[in-house]
Amino acid sequence: MVTVLVQNDNFIFEIIGLHKIWAMESKIIVPKTSIIRAHHEPEDFTFWKGFRMPGTEIPGLIASGTFYKKGRNFWDVMNKKNAVVVELKDHYFKKLIIEVKNPEEILHLLNTK
Image (cartoon, rainbow, N blue to C red; front, top):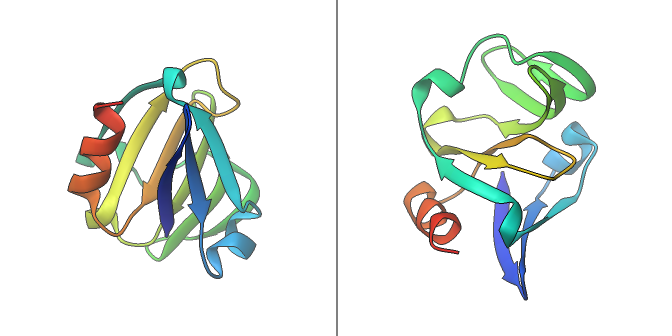
């Protein structure tokens, strides 16, 4: 799971708990200007996430880490119902596909930057 914080002109996506180990990442800092949009669309949560490097994947249970599919994407999802997709420009990652506690609140926060 990921928490989203706002600090100055950046969003900080902090990976919490054991997900830090599974994702091999602790936080991702994204300038507000790098966010194109955030959304939740079922077609983004595909079985094939791409080539995993580094990270953890147990199909149907967890996807956590860096995956390469049409660019470098970060995944940290166990429950697709609570997942959001954050599309980025001019950043190391093309997309962040993350599970959050309150998807509606996070979508509102990211889309009204």
